[in-house]
Image (cartoon, rainbow, N blue to C red; front, top):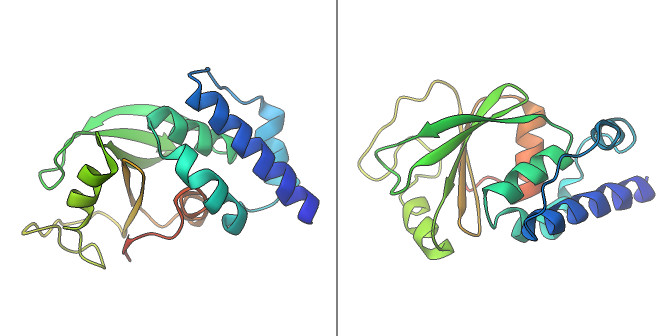
Length: 168
């Protein structure tokens, strides 16, 4: 069991190093299959510490982290929320929308993140009417918003970013 987690963690770290170096990463189908079948669910305890900093550096690192965790990721355009100071990129993760906001600095991200209430029901003076349960994650200059209840996506986001900082 420990070996499976070690293999999964090693694959994730390699994917992030390639992404950080500007390499194009398209994991072969057998990597995603190996992560899903051999290792089972993402090991959030191992992945969170090792992956959090590397994956959060830019959008390419996030995409690589998600792909390495065994999900499909497609770009689905941009999104603007009145309560965030930067536009976001919508990603389709296993068909579910995940919004990624990339800031110039971690401090700029923290300024926006500080406005989000613990349950995600208010952001500053805004009271969004969410289509599903909001889940907010952050690391480095990235702030992630996922509206949904898909447990696999929640597990993967927690594995990459650690526990959500706000939401239900």
